Image 1 (cartoon, rainbow, N blue to C red):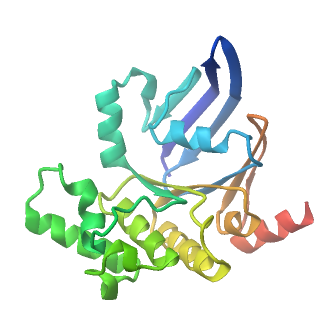
Image 2: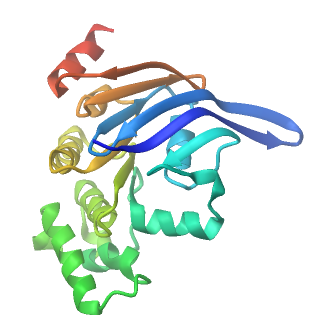
Length: 240
């Protein structure tokens, strides 16, 4: 599979009142199209910062980030915004749904300024709702949904633009174990269909659904393991 993301010696610093805080140091890896990668680490390890950089929500301080072979540092803010809208989908712990708005309208949101005909927008949104098994909730308001259903809507919204990669930041963090397992099964199925998934989590059970686990500690990669299957990933983690 072609290389989708290539990171070389990435560094990220934050400056506050002339105090420099180093969050990521010398991070390097590649992710191919179609991979399911979990980025793990304790709180403060830099995993969410890394996801924000990979998802064009933040810029690196030093190093190189190439997306589809292009140097991301050369893109303007408008170009990054366009990439976020067309190339990536986001699933966050807090769902980020519009309150008192229907499931379908929430899923249609990324397409509002796409210039597509309304009929096509509706069809794409309906197909995304179907993909996460929520057709029976299409016209329900977001405040009428359970946590698991809300996260399914968030996944459908992430899918609607047919992105190159889906970023999921602690997608099961607000869910009970049963709902969390259902969400991870959906992401696993999407990966089996060829979608690239990058998951950020500190939860062992959640990471075990990936096919590769990158572990961060204190802003550096401490391990990067490709596993033969998801069962091996879970058993390997349990032995550590």
